[in-house]
Image (cartoon, rainbow, N blue to C red; front, side):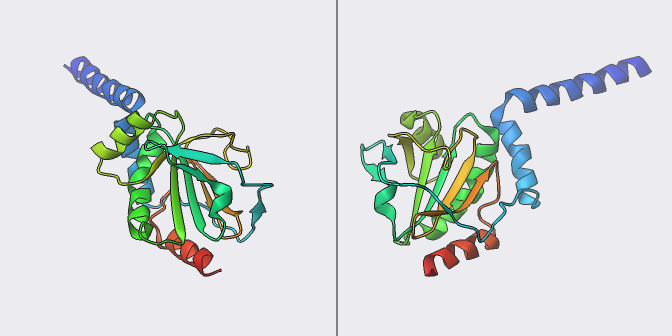
Amino acid sequence: MKFLKKNIVNTILLVLFAVLFFVPDAKAFVLKGFINIGLFSPDIKEEKTVVPDLDGIKFKNAKGEIVDLGELKGKVVFLNFWATWCPPCRAEMPSINKLYTQFKDDADVVFIFVDGDGDLPKANAFMKARNYQMPVFKAESNVPNQIFSGSLPTTVIFDKQGRISLKHEGMADYSSKKIIDFLMKLKAG
């Protein structure tokens, strides 16, 4: 009888680990729990990194509209690289959506969500299925390693002068008061 109970418990644990390993939404659910309890918060430093030239770094949405980072000087830019298959990306999406909802009508703050796979129909379907309203783009030019080196998710926030004010690789809670205050400070400066 003890042998049977031990086998059942082991089987249940094995199934749970398999689900967490193979099902992105399950892994994202667990990671989102870690975000919600405050374990993942981006480190905000007052240090500004100057990118050589933002002109010509372009992103395109499903409508064919192109956004050039060089033309966004004078605005705060929230740039997020993600993918539909990425569990940490999925885990941070609710917090990013909350932040986006708060600032979406603010002309001084621009949000660009870049699908790492460049599959806009799939990325837009992902957003629609989860009731996210964030604008999805794909890279339409080379993106310098200073901005994106390939790690998903990566978030970069530019100040009004086009300097990198925050760069965070990995998931984080972007709906926190700390981030909101940071964006407001960048808007004012």
